[in-house]
Length: 512
Image (cartoon, rainbow, N blue to C red; front, side, top):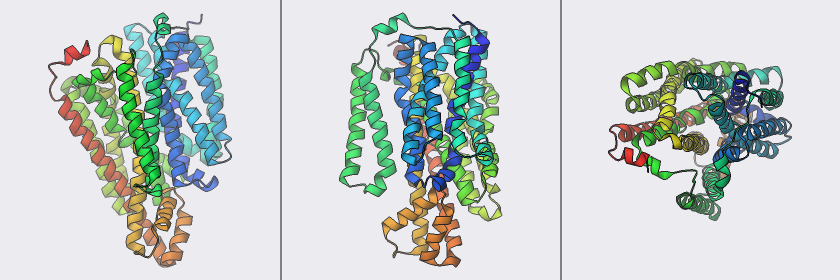
C-alpha cells in the first residue's frame, strides 16, 4: 500500500491545477473557436456551461462512490477519464463534438476535484500537516484559476487552440503515476450500506440544465413560445422534484436543515455572490479585450492578470481581517468591493478611446474583493456545521458555486446580446428586422468583429460601421458589468442581513 505523503500531495495538487486551468484558460480561446470552428455565440456559452453543469451533476455521487469503492480507485479513474476527455476536446472537428467532450471533461473534472479533497483529508489526518497540505493545495488550485488566461493565451500564440486541451492528457498521465506511487487506498465501510441519491442527482440536473437552456435560448425561441414555456416547466418540475427527493432520502445530497444555521447560510450567499459576478465575467472579459479593444491573445492574457492575480495574494490579509472583524463583516465587505470594482470597470469602459487601460483599476478592485471573500466564505461553510456534516457542507458549497456559475454565464450572455442589440437599434433604427438584429448582436458578442463590421457596413454604410460597432460593444459590455455589480451587491446585502446576528436556534439546528 503506497504511503508517500509528498507524492500524494503532488497528485492532488496537479489534479486541482488541471481542474482550474480548464475553467479559466478556455475563455481566452473563445474568439478563436468562433473563427476556426464557426461557433455561434450560444455555442461559446455552452462550451463553458457544459463543463460547469457536468461538474455539478457528479459532485455528490462521486463522494459516495469513492467512500464505497475506494477513494484512490475512483480518483485514478476520474483522472484517466479527464485525460481522455481532454484529448477528445482537442481533436474535436466541430462545435457539437467539442461541447459533448467538454461535458465528459466536466464529469471527470468534478469527480477528480472531490476525490482530491477526500484523499487529502485521509492522507493528512494530523492538524498541522493537514493544514499545510490544504494550504499548498489551495495555492496550486488558485494558480490554475488565476494564471489560466495567460497559459491559454501563450498556448494559442505558440501553437493552436487544440493544445489548450491536448496539453492536459500528458499531465493527467503524470498525475496517474503519482496516484499509483503515493496515494494510499481508503474507503468507508458504512458507505456500502447507504444507497445513492439518484433522484436528487437527476432532478437537480434537470433543473440546472433547463434553466441554463432557457436563459441561453429563450430570446431566440421566444419567451412565450411553447418550447420556452416547456423548458421553464421542466426546470421548475426538476427543482420541486429535487426538494421532495432530498426531504425523503435518508442520506440526501442537500440537508436543508443546515440553512437554519446563519453562519452557513451567510457563507453560502458569499459563495453565490462571487459566482453571480466575478467568475462568470471571466468568460466575457477576454471577449471584451479582443472584440472591444482589439487586443491580441497575449495582451489579453496579461491584462487578465490584473483581474485574477489579486485574489491569490489577498488570502493572508483576508485571514487577518477575519480574526479582527469576523466573517459577518468581511464577507459582505468583500462582496461590496467586487461590486465596486464592476462599477469601476463599467465607468472605465466609456473611455475605450484612451487605449482600454481605464477598465483595469476596476478589474484590480474586483480581484481584491474576491480575495477578501473567498477564504472567509470557504472556511465558514465547513466550520459552521458539526464535524459529521462537513463533507455534506463542502459538497453543498461546491454545488452552489457551480450552479450559480452556470446560470450566470448564461444570464450574462443574454444581457450582453440585449445590450449590443439595443445599441445597434439606436444606430440602425426600426427598419432592421429583429431576427437580423439579434443575429448581428450575437455575432459581435461572440467576437466576430470582422463579420459584424461587414454586416454593419452593408446596413449603415462603411463610415458609420466602426463608430456603431464601438458604441455597441461599449454599451453591451457595460450592461454586463452593471449586471455583475447589482447581482453581487444584492447578495452582499443578503449575506450581511443573515450574518449580522447569531440565530438563537443555530445550536439546535447544528445538531438536528
